[in-house]
Length: 222
Ligand code: DX5
Ligand code: ZN
Image 1: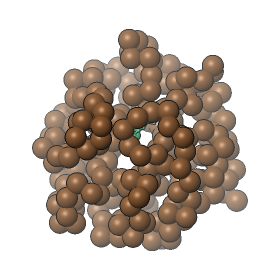
Image 2 (image 1 turned 60 degrees about the horizontal axis):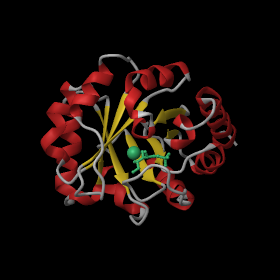
Image 3 (image 1 turned 60 degrees about the vertical axis):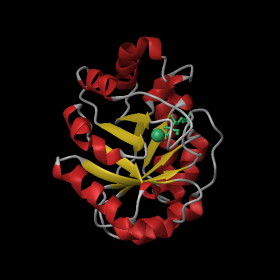
């Protein structure tokens, strides 16, 4: 799979969000990661559909929307209208049948579907959804805040990589990612790297993303 970076716009300078999107593009990012938090699934509230739509209006980069909400099923249509390309939902917001239905609904709008696992959720939790997803998000922090320390999930990533086998499914990691932690995750099989603080708060965003991509590429292919 291709190694891709997805800067988390939640960690940008919000007063200048339009300029930050431009900076994201110029820095060579492959996608934009858009965190939606409802204050219920996680103890924080972030950004919503109006901002998503405004960002869609100024960039052609794929937008990957991370739904940290208890009822993502209510918003699949509005996500599609607002320009989401990938929609990720957490596996623990309902039973297997409910999650499967949501993933199929996401795909029915022509978007890519992904399932996310919090740090405490075992790798096996993805098995029921393996044929309904284009991407699996392995959280490397507890969801809710940018700027937390990386939690090592390499065993979980390696197991998921094995379950995936030949299927064209990406493994994304999110939380505390920098060149060093990206390389660790890539060695285990991760190929999409969400980067919040280590990109927007870096002195040179392009260099930060290049370093992460290069370190991950070397580790992934060894
Ligand atoms: C946390 C979010 C992340 C966050 C990443 O719940 O899902 O996308 O913005 O930020 P960093 O890379 O700073 O940990
Ligand atoms: Zn996220």
